[in-house]
Image (tube, rainbow, N blue to C red; front, top):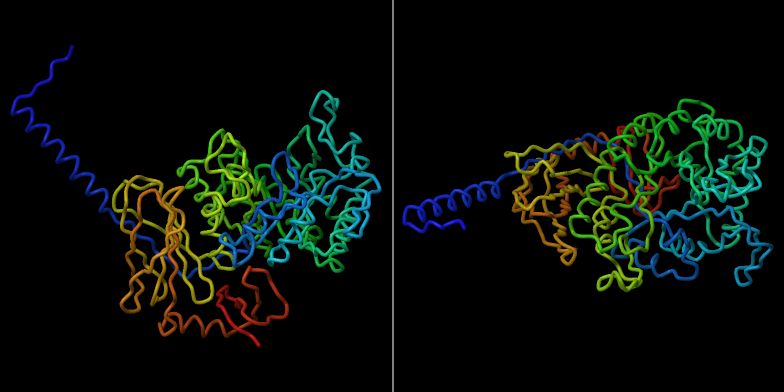
Length: 512
């Protein structure tokens, strides 16, 4: 047994040690992080979304409540991109009665959600997990990677390349006939992943052949649709680079896409985005889920990791981020599964949705600015930041995953005259809003950065500032392009929209 010393000297030594520990903690708490934002502009953000499905890629059918909760500028979350499957599966010559259109394919399940999303101003796009089985080397829509499927790799047959884009046209026509103008279609979900469910393998060379020689059969003009590249599992840049390096294929591709499984955003996706930016192509992350398939509800730390992924995607050059399932106990909307309750009530918003809202409600339609940070001590290497400009708003995101609070000193490119701080600090404290006191226009502002927090600081730019007046003068020179408030390019601007100048600057304008 260890004997405890209780002498006066020992007590004083313990007290001194405690005071030293408290002093160190105070010093850590008082550390200041400085973020310097410069008026150097990168990508314009189209938006954020999720896939209209839950368990085993099942579409929602007539249950449109997840879309109603998540989509539209008046919703609490503000999503504006929806992904759906272009199913290869035959359902027979079925009439869906009240929708008034027949199709041999199982495309009806996503239709109600797509209609609801479009009603709320969203972009909707379709992804094939496989072309029809009759077009493939293994004769089935399945990928072939199972004993029951004979371990036969499923690929698009070379004599069916010419059928692929006409098949996509039939999907577009079906959706159009039922009131949904699809905004984009993808070539393939995870062309580099051999699976035992719906899947189809393409090498980068096979995808190039398909696009270069056959993509002109996609009726873009008739349907007003954009073409998305195949979406590799880990955003392998070989797939998109091969398309963009070929001048014929490049003219057909509008958006390059991929997933993040096994490859964080600042790796493969950042690499792929370099060539995409050179040729003016958008970059969409079209599927990933952070901490999915948990056997418990996500912790607040899990939510902050998700926030960091969103932030890193923006830093990598991403213009669109689309999460995996909308509805799952680890996603945006509750499933009602009793083993994950309380806190997982069916068709109610989950904490992760509110984390997404920091980006989807405020970063959508903005242009990313250059932002760098420096820390006065070594206590917060986990700190992340990014910055954006949208019209007359200057937005700074800040994520702190540590247990220490800090002061955050912001050095801004323009003077600002007012501000709002949106704060999330736990799964139960998700959306606190408070004003930032600014007595007179300033370009250096100090704001609080609480421990373990996600923060959005939104400032109103003072248009009387010399720097912003000079920038607005430059904006009046050269050709301009226009975008709606979701970041979608529009050819005939009307009403409130975003005006982008040749030099990359943007501002919110109203056009009669």
